[in-house]
Image (cartoon, rainbow, N blue to C red; front, side, top):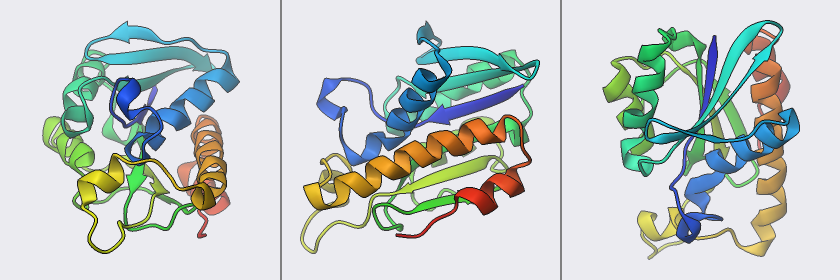
Length: 187
């Protein structure tokens, strides 16, 4: 069993913000796989089988900083091993258009990842980080992540969102090391 969680904030107000690239990636993947979203425990969930293995897509509806509260019930109920979890999210430390896949790591200051680590008690889950870049001098991190992409970054970010969805789908049937080698990219 595998779980792919895409992080973001619920509601129209946050729809196209930098913080919601994880939601966008899962929407791309769900559409590509012909899946529909259903209400779960503090989340939207889509499920299917790939090569006989159950796969869940999950979008927390708890707001970013409480993402782990939506993920923990599903992981616990189905007794999903931590190494069978992939999380797709935004990363300030990567330029827009960059995509970085990692086997594990810390939270790097990302509150959604911090919540997941705290709720699951482990950090050995796969990560797909989509670059959103740092705020301009004088801008706050909060206004940056809750803002939209400028036109000059939008095309590269949209391509990266597509690639992150492809990477998640590839992981359903390939070892993660192969997926990392294929999809890691700098902009």
